Amino acid sequence: MCGRYALRRDVDDLVEEFEVDEDTLSAPDAVVTLSTNVAPTTTPPVVLERFRKDEPDAPPTRSLRALRWGLVPSWSKDASGAARMVNARVESLLDKPAFAKAAVARRCLVPVDAWYEWQTSASATEGGKPRKQPFAVSAADSSVLSLAGIYEFWKDPAKAEDDPSRWLVSFAVVTTAAEPGLDRLHERMPVVVPRDLRDAWLDPSLDDADDVRSLLDAVPRDLFLGGALTAHPVSRAVGNVRNTGADLLDPVPLDELEGVVDLRTGELLGA
Image (tube, rainbow, N blue to C red; front, side):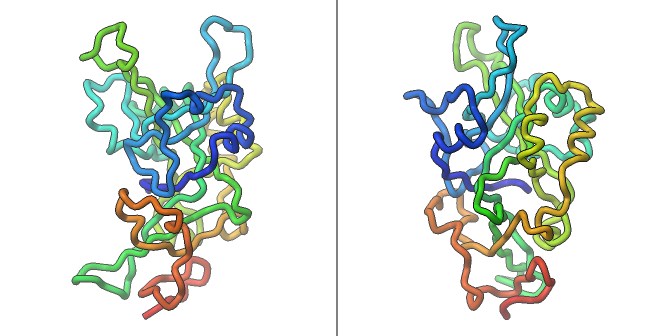
């Protein structure tokens, strides 16, 4: 967790939602992943703020950029380990060498319509193994969610200094212990940054570890039971990254469920 999510909003909607100053995704050569089945190593949109090198006294610029999902630390010899670093645990975010510098200097927001998680059944099996039912977790009001992320720059030592492709910019989603209700899906969940904390999370001048820790502590932990988040079972087709149909987010009818536990009540649904 979090290893798959959906984002199918128009770029213009994201620009408006996140009050973006610079949209790099509308350029003719932009390669951006907008899909109901976003997977690691693809390049979905993220929102970030940076100070311009030639304007040190100007406020930071908020940009919408397509970054590769799977963080590559700046000191890595190569980019082969990116697929293993799609998440950064909040408990070690400010201490782990791969994430610590980015956590205080390079934070971003990852827009999603929903993220997917698989519930392992305690009662239903398939081929002798526990059956897994995917769920989509989204905002109850259908608004776009913003997940906490960090990003990093990596320079490919095998490429020439004048090669514009020598720089890889990648990101990871910050995760935390799942809150009540969602812990019936998985023990982890992404950190969901509420609207009133978005500016602070993106602010590059907030570069003290204690301040970042306090910011993370301010993130609410009752979004699901409090009604801000909702979750429903979806087609198992989402397990194949090649499936990207609009119907992946559609709820699965109750009579098609088997061994699924209701997230709010703990009641067993289906046979």
